[in-house]
Length: 116
Image 1: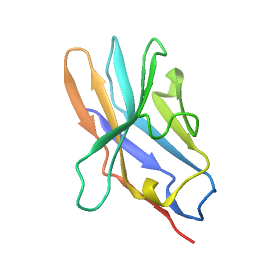
Image 2 (image 1 turned 45 degrees about the vertical axis):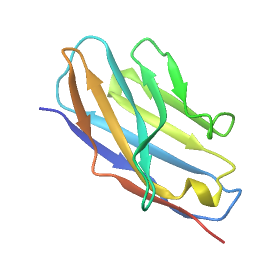
Image 3 (image 1 turned 90 degrees about the vertical axis):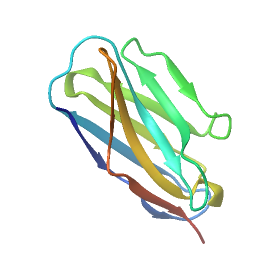
Image 4 (image 1 turned 90 degrees about the horizontal axis):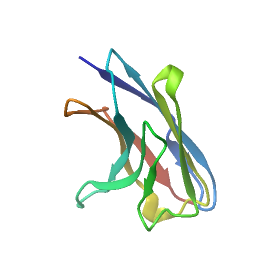
């Protein structure tokens, strides 16, 4: 069993920055993908950014150029640096881990609020 522990998030003004962190606690082996999804009130959960164990990254068009995802393989951790935040980035952000063999884990979510 793997547990995802998230940190970061909070309230920030438009144009500000935040960093989210997620650590996977537990054993897993082989190729994997870690990343972040978000869900705003009344909307479906959507991909924000992911990174694979071979460092291939993927970003939603809405965050390209503003967000950067990175990983620490030694710690089974991933970070999401979010810059130039806008009110439409307000959502609950969920860490996710997809392992091989195929199992999908989710964190409990952390609130990000962008407001003046």
